[in-house]
Amino acid sequence: MENTKKERFHKQCKYNQYVKQKSPKPNFFKNAIWAFLVGGIICICGQFIMNTLKVIGLQKEEVGTATSIILIFLGAFLTGVGIYDKLGKRAGGGSIIPITGFANSIVSPAMEFKTEGYIFGIGAKMFILAGPVLVYGFTSAVLVGLIYLFIGK
Image (cartoon, rainbow, N blue to C red; front, side, top):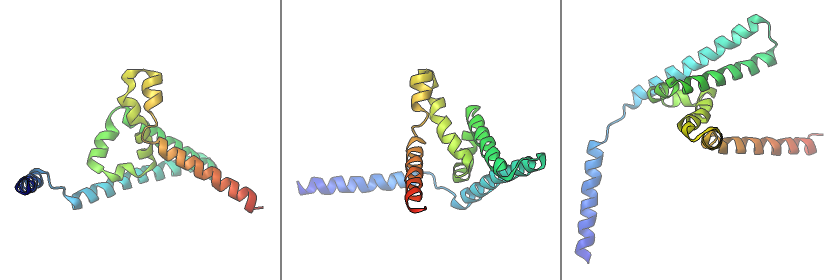
């Protein structure tokens, strides 16, 4: 009995060494540079949109809202045509962190399950990734609003 445990342990160690040897080694420096560049480019695009909307004549509050809407639309659209996922493979966290990454997290599952129909496919699967984030955000907003309502006056 003792011998078989040692043999299994020895085989597991050999297997772990084999997997470690065959696994690709990520280049952390290169990945960090790509994430920084792509995230920065997304932010530059957002700033360009904001500046353009200011020049058009929108008010400060309207500019922020319109910029968010445009960036979410672009993220969802680029996910729908398959560009954002390719960008995400290259950029990693640089494409996930901005608001466009949130749009991607909502549209990606919907695109994956679109063959199941509009209700059981797109409608049901759209919020698989973003659902918990939205629930937590809405719940937090309600709680903070109630605290402000009762304590803030």
